Amino acid sequence: MFSRLEAIDDADILATIGRRWDIAVDRLDYAPVGFGSYHWIAHNESNRWFVTVDDLDMRLLSERDDRTSARERLRSALTTARALHSSGLRWIVGPIPTTAGHVIESISDRFVCAIYPFVAGDTSGAVEYRSSRERCAVIERLVELHDCTDAVDSTAPDDD
Image 1 (cartoon, rainbow, N blue to C red):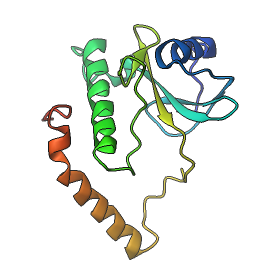
Image 2 (image 1 turned 90 degrees about the vertical axis):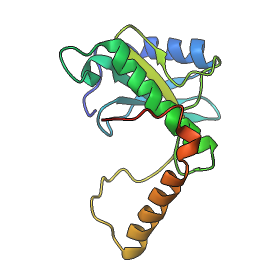
Image 3 (image 1 turned 180 degrees about the vertical axis):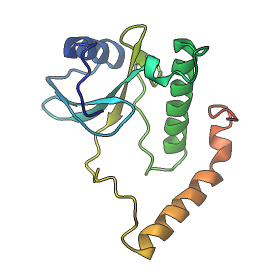
Image 4 (image 1 turned 90 degrees about the horizontal axis):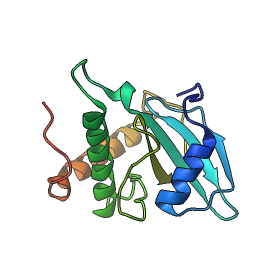
């Protein structure tokens, strides 16, 4: 999201990181990148992390949907990313589990937080490949991803 989240204070995010991940963060900088989640870069003397906060109300699929279902879908997706990374797909950046082993934690009943290793990269959002080599690399990664189905059978539910 390009606009900063007003409903949650940085202090709430810092408290959740300290309490659930046991990570001491000296500074939290809002990062207006991407879409679907709000993003921060967390810093201390020796490390950086990419922090996401999701508004569960924005993840509702219908008027009958609820925050619990939205939270479960997000938890399932991030658990799947973590499992894929752990199964050897190092190019997938999975979330860092909390001290209790969870991939997301509640900041409030409406907002959840996840933390990832910080990876410097290109966020240009290019939609065209610059070469056939890039296009082939994406196809190779899709093949690798589909070869790991067994690693995520229990975390990636069927989607209609």
